[in-house]
Image 1 (tube, rainbow, N blue to C red):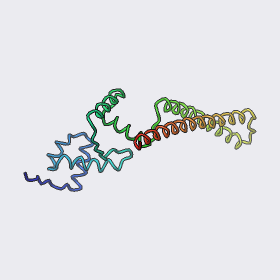
Image 2 (image 1 turned 45 degrees about the horizontal axis):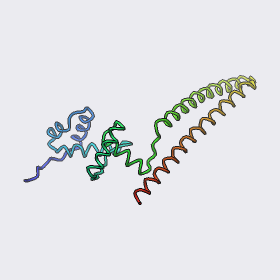
Image 3 (image 1 turned 90 degrees about the horizontal axis):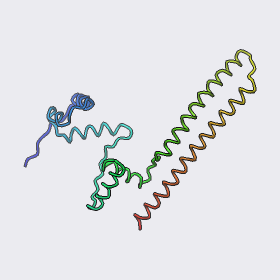
Image 4 (image 1 turned 30 degrees about the vertical axis):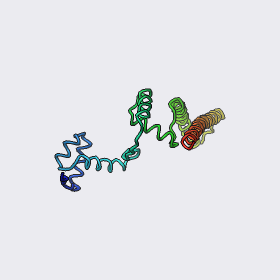
Length: 185
């Protein structure tokens, strides 16, 4: 069967195509309109997406047994994820890509919010102190003590966040070592 010959797209057509893709026009419709294959459209889209951070344009094909697929599907159901998302997470986790677990993520987020709030208070206090100094006023010892306490709180929260992240990284390293031992063994 002879292969269909598809036309090449001009730069103007590519720009128009990109706009239509952003507008969620179906790929099949675009392929017909521009006289190219759907694969050409997807290749262009992937090329554009590769320039974005966190793009997932690379494809990895893996063959597994029926039993392995059943276990992957069971895990996907348990995690309430798609098969692809489950496989991606398992693969990246085994490869040592750092993921923060939800409980730690929540703690870190709460600490970050506290540090941000304290930081705003520190900025306001320092601004007020600078204004007082410019007017020739003396800064009360109580204000300086409060500022010192707030800076100490920031340091304490930063250390707690660092500790959480180190603990998680150590747990993950242990898990990765176990995965590698199983793979090698």
